[in-house]
Image (cartoon, rainbow, N blue to C red):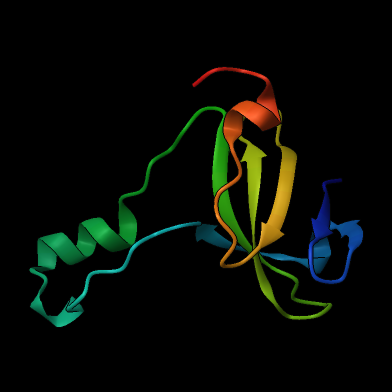
Length: 100
């Protein structure tokens, strides 16, 4: 069972309390209606599939209901950290001890 820390409630709870909400720090097009079908498809569905630390968005669905960001290692499925939405990305070198 995965345990996830909500940075708002300050509680670490089972994954069933949360909902995955996709990749974090995505910049939306300024004018979505001006995108071609191919550009819109690429924006909505084509995401990086990294091996290792990955920035994700989560929602504490059965708690405070707020969205937050997390860094999860896709190899070990371990959460390296969680942080409030709007906060800057944490430095991966500090989290993992590896130089990227």
